[in-house]
Image (cartoon, rainbow, N blue to C red; front, top):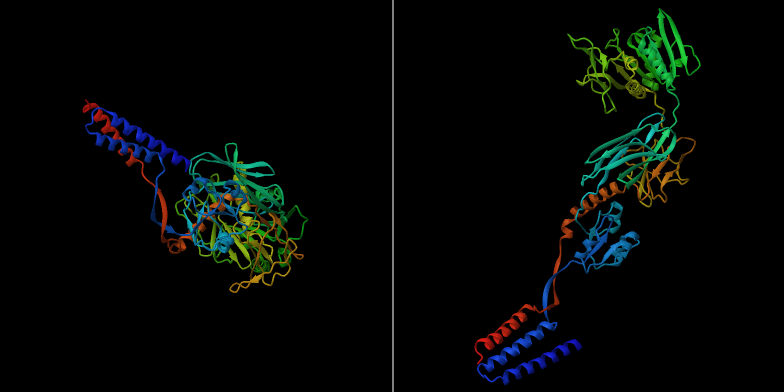
Length: 594
C-alpha cells in the first residue's frame, strides 16, 4: 500500500508542476489542450506503474483430478498441473518430487480423497495388482517404450550336459550400441552386441548341478543398464542305459558305441556274427546275458538302438517282449532303415519310405531340430520318410525332405532314421554335428521317469510382496507339498481335476524351498524388485493402457463451472495514451510556439 501512495503522491506533484509550467508560458494559445495533455500523460504514467486489476468470471473444468507418479515419470510434466494433488507409493519418487503425497497403499486415494473422481497416471503405469488396489478411473498417456530387453525365454530346467539357450527381443529405439552378456559365477559365458531392434540368442553348457543363478546383463559402454537374475535347476542325471542291436558289424554302431561310452552312457551291444550266434559287450557297466532278449532283460534299458534287419531277425518271444516294453513300459526304440525295412512291421508303419528315382547319393547339409545352423554336409541316399499325421520330423535336408521322424507308441517313443552313415561326421572331425544328432535322438526316445507331482509358478515374473500363483499337477490332493515349510491352501480346478492352485505372497527373493514328503520336487525362484525392470515396465504400459481404454467413457466425463478470477489490466492502453499525450505536447511546443 505504501508503494501505491508514494507513486500517487509523486504523480500528483508532477501533474501540478507540469500544469503550472504550462500556465507560465507567455503564449496562451492551446493552453486548455496543453493542460489536458499533461493530465492524460501523468495519469497514464501512474497507471503504467501501479498494479491495476479487475475481476471477472471464467468457465473452468471441474474434473477433481489427481496425479499418480510411477516409474519413468518426468518432473517437467508436472508443470502442466500446478494445482492438482500429486501422489506416489514410492519413497524414491517422494525424494525426487518432495511435493508428492506418499501413500502406504494406492487404495488410500479412493478412501482418503473422496472428492477425486479420476487419476492421471504419469510414467510407465501400474501392474494388475496396482490397478486393482487403485480401483479408480485412470487417464494414461502411453509413454515411449524404453530401451532394453522386451522379452526373454530360456530352458531353466536342465539335465547335466544339456545346453542352456537364452532367447529374446531387444528394443533399441535410439540406435546405440548395447552389449548383452550371459554371466555365471562372475564369468562371462556368452555375449552379443545389439545395435538395432531385433532378436538375440545366447547359449552355454552349465558345468554345475543343483540350483544355480546366472545373470543376464545389458551394458551401454561402461554403464550397466540391466542386471537380471536367470535361475536354473540343473539335475544330475542317471546315465541313460542304451542297448545296441546290430545284424552285422559296421562302422555306424562302432562309432556310436565309442561316443556313448565317452559321454558317460551305459552301453551294451549285441552283434550277430552268424546264425544264432552273437558278440556282446558292456561298457561303463557289468556284463549281463543278452542271448535271450526277454522282458526281464529289456527292462534294464532306457533306449534300444537297432537296424531294421536285427529287429526282423528277433525270435517271436523277443519281438513280443520288445513291443510290450515299448508300448507299456516306455522303452525308447531307435530304428535305422536298411534293405530289410518293411512298412508292415509295427515299428515302421508310421514311417513309410519313398525313394527318388534316377538319383544317387548326394552331399547335403542337414537341419537338426533345435539347432539354428545347418550341419556340415553329409552324403545321403535318395530316400526320405513320408510324413504321416502324429509324427514329428527331427532331421531334414535342404529340400525339407524328412530323414528322421518320431512318434508315440503307447507309453514309449519310436524314432525312425533313414541315415546310416553319420560316422562320416566323426571321420571328418565334425564332432559337434554328430553330438547334436545322437543327443537329440536318444533324448527324444529315452524312457522317462514317472512324475507323480509337478509344482510350478504360473505368474510371469514372481516377485517379493506380490501375489503369486502356485500350480501343482497331481492325481490326488497335494497335502504333502510344502513351500518354505508352510503348507499352501491348494484348491482343485473345477474343470481340470488334476490341476491344483494356491496363492501366496513371497516375503523374500531367491530360491523358495519346496518339499513333497519323500518324493523329489524342484525348488522355485522369486525375483527381486530390480530384476527384469524393463520387461515389467513394458507390461505395466500395456495393462495400464488397456485398463484406461476399457473405461474411456468414464474418464472423459468432465463437468464445467463458473469461477471468479482476478486479471491484470493490460498496460499497453496506458502506454499508448502516454505516448499520444507526450507527442501532442512536443508537436505543440515545436510548431505552434511563438
